[in-house]
Length: 124
Image (cartoon, rainbow, N blue to C red):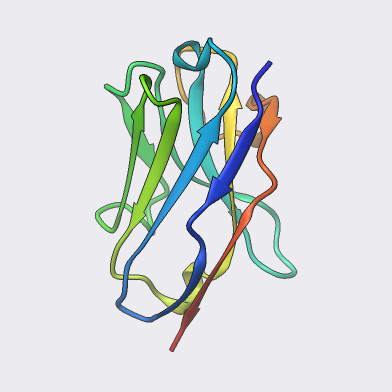
């Protein structure tokens, strides 16, 4: 089992940057693929990015590819999401999630463990 805690959200102007971090407990972090998801008010939670357990494979939502970068540090049990060129439509609560598999997935149902979320607000 793994416990996840996100940090780094906040308010930023359009075009700005934010870096989110997710700290995981447990000694088996490196066995989990990790993902970032987001949920805007009145909308369903959606996939943003995923990374495999080694960090060698990543996949992004089309609308964030080239602006967001997911990375992980298995020695520190963390997964980060660097967000650049932010847009108002990126406003949402961002969640990190862990999948008990080496390969990442864009499907919410593949992830058994979730953090509590961190708010990101992008003003126009």
